[in-house]
Image (cartoon, rainbow, N blue to C red):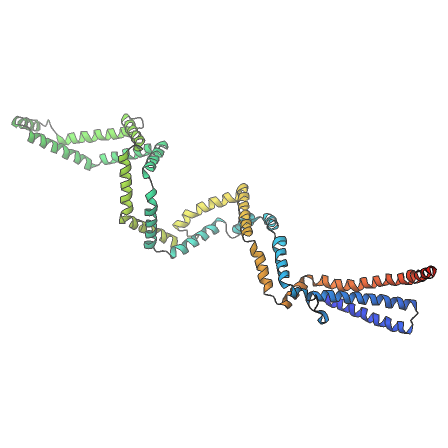
Length: 435
C-alpha cells in the first residue's frame, strides 16, 4: 500500500472528525462525551499536522516555510557523503565482504562449470583456440628475429662449460653413458661388417706393401716377388682376417665387463672430472657459443622451427580428428585436470589463493565503492535525491505521521481526563483553601 496516501487519508479523517466534534460542541457545549471527542480530535489533529510538517520539511518547504526546511536539498553534499560512507565502511566493509566471499566455494563452482562443458576436452580446445588465434597473427620471420635477439641478449650471461660438465655427470649417474657406449659399439660393428670397410682395409694393406717395397732394396723386392709367387702373402686373406678380428673386438666392447670398455669408460669419467679445470675446454665452449649465436643460421633455424610450429598451431583440430598439437597437449591437460579434481588439499589452497587475491583487489580498490556512490548520487537532481530517500525510508516516515495523529489523540485523551477529573476539581479547591 502507498503509505503516503494512507497517512494523508488518516490526517484528512482526523480533520473531518475534528470539524464534526467542533460543530457538535457548538450545539452541545456542556456534553461530556462531545467535549471529550473535541479535545481528543484536536490533539490528534495537532499531532498529525506537526508530524506532517516535520516529515515534509525533510524533503521540501511545507507551506513555503523556509526556516530549517528542505533538509535533504540543503544538505545534499552531507547526505551524499554520509550515504557513501555508510555503504563503503559499514554495509560493504572489507571484513564483511571477506567473510561473505570465504563462504563461496569458488573452485568447486568453477570445476563443476568446466566439467559440465566438457572438462579436459573443453580446456584443451580453449587452449588450442587461443594458441591458434595467436599463431594466425604471427609471422615466422619476425618472430624468429625477435627470439634470436632475445637469445643473443640473454646468452651473454650463460656459462655453458659447467652445464656441459653437469650434463655429462648426470648422464654417467643415470647410465646414459653405458647406453651410448652400447649404441657406439653396435654402430661400429655394423660399419665394420660392411663391405666398404673390408675394401678400405685391403686398400690400406696394398698401400703399405707398395710403400715397403719402394723403400726396400733390390734384395727385399726380389724376396717379396718370391713370396707373392708362392702365395705366401695374400692381401685379400689378410684383409678378411683383420676385418674378422675387428668385429670380434667390437663385439667384446658391447660387454659391460670387457676390459677395453671399462678402460674407455674410465677415460670418459676422468675427462668429465677434469673439465671443470680445463680452461681450454671452457674457452672452446664459449667460442662455440659465440659462433652459433652470431651465425645467420641461428635465425634461419629458428624461422624454420617456428614456421612448422605455427603451421601445427594453425591447423584445425577436433577430438574426433586431433592434430599433433592436440595429441601433445591433451594428455597433460587431462593429467592435471584429474589431479585438481581429486586433490582436496590442493583445491583448498587454490580456493584460499583466489579468495586472498580477490579480497586484496577489493581492499586496494575499496575506495571505488564510495566513489561510485558519490558519483551516482551527485548526478541526481534535488527531486531525484528526495525520491531516492523517499523510496528507501518513505514508508517509515509516513508511519511517523500516522503515529503522530494516534499519539496526539491518546495524549489528548489523558490530558482531558486529567483536566476533567484532577485539575478542575482539585486546583480551584486548593486555591480557595489558600485564600
